Amino acid sequence: MLSNIRIVLVQTFHPGNIGAAARAMKTMGLGELVLVNPRAFPDDEATRLAAGATDVLANARVAGSLNEAVDDCVQVIGASARLRSLPLPHFDEPDAMAQSALGNAQSAPVALVFGRERSGLTNEEIRCCTHQVSIPANPEYGILNLSQAVQILAYELHRGWRTRPESDFAYQSPAEATPPTREQFDHFQRHLHDVMQQSGFLTQPHARTEEQLQALFARAEPSRKELSLLRGLLSALEPRGGD
Ligand code: SAH
Image (tube, rainbow, N blue to C red):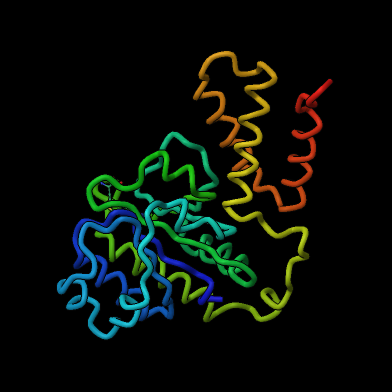
């Protein structure tokens, strides 16, 4: 279960934070680290702060974009101190996030995504996520150091896993209830975009309309089966060649 959970750090500036995040992960039984365009990696400072977790660093994968890092995941949870305009489903409590992530991670990869030290995640990157999570903290200053945010969420995952009621997790959800991967969801969104354009629904570049519809579908959390039903509907609405 924990082996299906991936920690993704986006454009980390300080290599020391990468090392400290690797240590935070290993202490909580997590081993899969993906770095999206890190400023400096590998790096001595990262190795030094990883202490006994240099194996996590050695196995870390570097990706060119967040999309590439989470394509195969069925749930992508963006950690953010602040709420953005995109109304994604939001976990206000890290333990609720852990329950949901552990449930999905029984059968497929799940990612937890952390942003840059200075500027967090961009709206574009938040759009790659299916959910958001915040660590409740001092309302006057609630922004944690990156590796400490990793530590807290990793702790919650480990705690959820340690204390899991066997009966709950023994139940495997039926295949048709499995969430789609991000890649499958992206294909749906591109299909929707094409149909909206071809049908004349989008007459000008209505970026906001499209964003709102994307947020609606993200909140609906469709299963694979439901997504393929929607794809079928879109195909039926598409103009047929030759007609
Ligand atoms: N100035 C940035 C903060 C970046 S802190 C901003 O305002 O977004 C670096 C990363 O640590 C964040 O992108 C987030 O992933 C994580 N983080 C820090 N504090 C957090 C909190 N209270 N809840 C959830 N994640 C947090």
